[in-house]
Length: 226
Length: 226
DNA sequence: CAGCGTGTGAACGCATTGTGAACCTGCGAG
DNA sequence: CTCGCAGGTTCACAATGCGTTCACACGCTG
Image 1: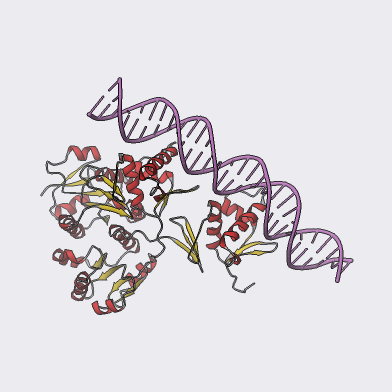
Image 2: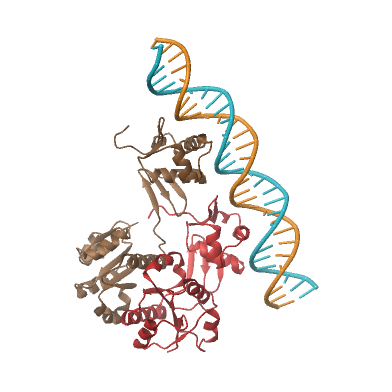
């Protein structure tokens, strides 16, 4: 996801903390010029403008962002309680607002709703490891840009392994954590699924799942290269 | 100015106090029926729904208000901090939200902004995805220029799926979000409606609704670019 | 009553999955 | 160096779980 434009530069700690906690990428900019200079190739995904310290500058920035060829949306304004009255004649400068200090959960919900409204969809939940990307919402997997057509159990197994990279799991552990039932008899089950996974990963990437003899399987590189 | 619809009946004192202070006229209603019964001749000017005491009832009311011939707008939801997570898949049920206890100044500013937005908002109210266009005002659907003759449930199901492209939904989720009741017994219902939808979409487009085995259904392709 | 929309149970077909057995491989013992 | 074996890989096949499809019942509306 592209970055959010955040004002001012540097932003107040409470705001950055809330953004980090909601795991939205962001870049700060002091003014309209800086915002244009630092803009990502695909454009800003939105803006969060904090108006408590320098209201004039903040509103000026909002106005500039709205006057561009492609008006920047969505724009979330952060204001103090005493500034609420100032919003009345500036309704066109923002899409939503919240009060200082911004609460992470509220900020996240507001951004979520704004992105939904502006049609950009939701931020996908991803599991990433090197060339592998698992999209937990769409149940799709991609390795090095190539989509993987995985069955349900394959996906679940890969998801479990990829969320604990480097760690070795015994077959029993995998059976109970991925399959969800107690192990009774079929350790081969894991082997075969690992094999099918490796086959679908392809020659290039099949080393991502390593066999640890007499122990189990590990996903990804161990720190020691073994 | 026409009255705001307020839920529940009676509303929490903090809410009424804030509304009085902001001098918005209002009437309380406990549910969808009461809301229809008490509706002014010119319709509600908007709604403020407080969800802290009875979330299920509140969301049901929102859904009902949105499903009317003329969906009620704007709709402001009042929630507790712990309910923020519940908003994620209900983005279509409200236009803005604020936290309990509602602060008069914030509530006034939010209502002000909502009225401004809906007053001059650009709202053809379209849902678009590739060749598919849903006109939420006229309840018509078009695929690749060809009009679709959908039944009510088919339209609702397609609308829900198309507003969350790429995301996989279980049958239970679809039942509770589209049908609006708790699942008891009929997962086949979803299958059959999906089948009827696919049939009407035609051979060309039926792939828009994909089956994710052991999980559910997905509309459209996921986007990896973001 | 006919027609339509909708929900539900049952039959069917097939992809997925689990399992046993054969085969391979690495490693230690002798 | 060779042998034996424990453990891993691969294969083939059967069972089962899941989705699709069909047929029908129910309720509503004209």
